Image 1 (tube, one colour):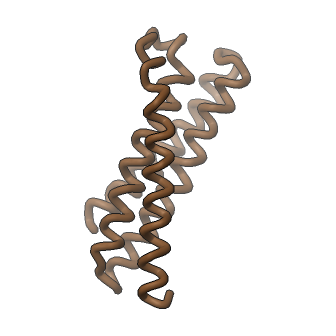
Image 2 (cartoon, rainbow, N blue to C red):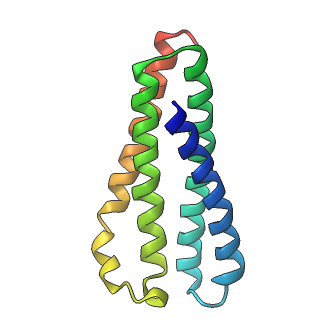
Length: 129
């Protein structure tokens, strides 16, 4: 779970930086709908950074393969979901025109996030949380 705790802190740290960048550095440079998309990526990243932190803390008291699976799904989901949104939203500024090909990656990341929550629910049910 040390890696999960590290991922939680890195996602939280970078989420705050990306949120500030979006609010101050991208305002006026991105179309309003793209800025909203970027902010959505930040919001999901920060929410799931907290979830990873909670999972890591629970795993210290109740070690479980389900918690490991949940954390893995969430960590991968954030990377694919938020990461693809950041690239898609900023593709015109960065010149990453190939980012359009990442469109299908976003829902895959979302499915991984849903899976992480579902596995966590199974863990909670089995542990009478």
